[in-house]
Length: 100
Image (cartoon, rainbow, N blue to C red; front, side):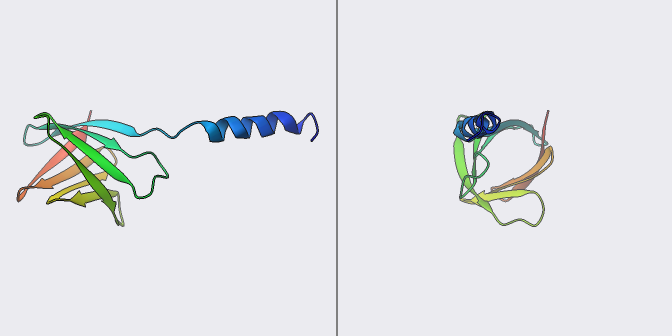
């Protein structure tokens, strides 16, 4: 290995050693509720989101197939995101949520 390629090789090792971090976003919903969504790190298979509601209740939803945006569903709850907006469906109702 030449001296020129050594820094590049070490940079690749350092970059691959850094763990991918989960992404967290806070949402305000049209019905007045608030929730925090903690998305699994990129590359995690299967993907999932943990929704934490202001009541102290949280639920983990597995990622589902989606042609547009990110869709997570399970246990009668669906959380569908696109950009900064999301739709939360649960208990027969639906609310629009947005990040700040």
